[in-house]
Length: 300
Image (tube, rainbow, N blue to C red):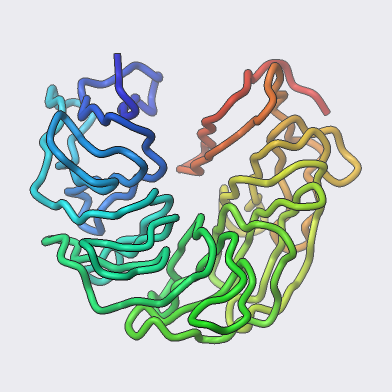
């Protein structure tokens, strides 16, 4: 039994002792830069029986530990769902559907102390839900994706770039027409998975936000991640789709990150599902998926 939170061995899939226990949906997990803390965000109001308003932190444990979880004192309070978090330079940046954090106005974006949970002065404003945040490789910008049309009062629909220091817009040229669900990046390119009119993966020049290419599917692309390096690198996409480009692709697909072309040789076959892949993680040589699906035989 695991209430909304679990730890699973990456080696063989067995369930580990870690068992914090949330009383509601968990939307996002993030690990501190020193690897000692797991930040938890979602729509819960308690963790392990202790009050935690949609945000909490647990001491990270190793796979060999018998610990069932140690709840930390870190406890900022959000009045709506927290969907994404990014630890950076002593802060944890938050995005979601909330309007206030610790009683102060923070429309869907906020920053709190990584160690203390104290609310920071950083307060950009989004007029719609923020689904995803990711920091640039050098930490100088924070990329924001979601269902907003304006940031800080300026027209910046669904994807934008902010200063993590001041919260000011840093300029972004191209904007999709549908919700941005997920972002990932390499050294020069930001990749977005979105929905609306089917779904899409889009590649943007990171420095300017200029659109480089778009590849379309017949359903929302909810999760994206990069696997491998150099010429062997692939962009993995997961979502609600059954076709990608001209290929049958049930809920997962691999694309060339330079051209956007679908890899014709890589096709796990996900079936028995309506919603498909909700989340994915690329780590080492593996891709981990979570969602509403069954993975079966290969299908090209």
